[in-house]
Image: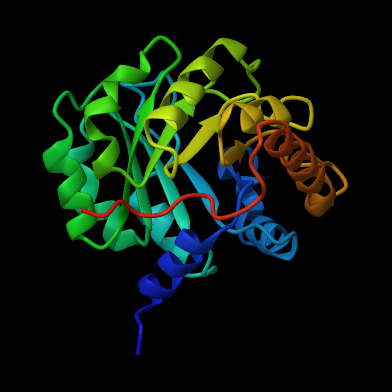
Amino acid sequence: MPSERTERLRAWDGATAPLITPSLLDCDFAEVGREIARLEAAGVAALHLDVMDGHFVPNLSYGPPVVADWRAVTDLPFDAHLMISNPAEYLDAFVDAGADSLLVHAEVVRKPADLLRQIRDRGCRAGLVINPPTPWTAVEPYLDQLDSVLVMSVMPGFGGQRFQETVLEKVRAIRAARPGLRIAIDGGINARTADQATEAGATQLVVGSATYRADGNYAASLGEVAEAARRGLQRGGAAPGRAGAPPAV
C-alpha cells in the first residue's frame, strides 16, 4: 500500500495550475484546526507553512512540533517555507513532522546541491527561494535539481506587504530557462495581483492575508484569486494544466 506521504506527493505533483496555496501565517492560531477545516472545505490543494526563526527574518512563527500537530488534523500536502538561517540542521525534524515540500533560501545556502539531494532522499520535494534583491541567476545552476522555485514578491517576515512588480522579470527568466518547472510567488498576492504573476509564468500562488475573510467564506476569497490567476495564464499563452513536475534526476 502506498504510504500517506506518497499519496500526498501524488496530489502535490498532480495539482493543476494555477495552484493556490494559502499560508497559515494569517489564520486564527487559537482555532487552527477549524481554520484548516475551512480551507479544506474551500478545496485548496495544499497548505503553505511560513517557518521563521527571528534571525534570517525579523519575526518568529512555529517549528516542527506545531507542524506535527497540524499533520494530525489534515491530509493536505504541507509546503514548508524555511525562512531560517540553518535549514540543514532542521531538515529531518520538518520531514518527520510531516512536511512534504521543503523550500530553503538561496541567500543562506550558497552551494545547495547537497541539501537539495538530502531533502529528496528523505522523500520530499525540494525548492529554492529568492528574495526580491536576489537575482534569478542564484538558482539558475540548480534548476534541473529542483521541484520548484519560490520567488518572493516582498521581503519575508511579515504579511500584508505590497506586491513588488519588479520581481516578475525573474519569473519570466526562470520560466524561459526551464519551462516545465513549478514557479511559485509569495507576497502581496490577491485578486488584483494574481493575474500579473501568472501572466509572467508563475503556476503556484501563495496567498496570505487575502485568504481570511471575516465571514469565514474562504472559498469566495480564494476563488477570486484563482479566477484572476486563470485570466493571467490565458494572457500569458498557457492553458491551465499541471503546476509543475519533479525533475528527472
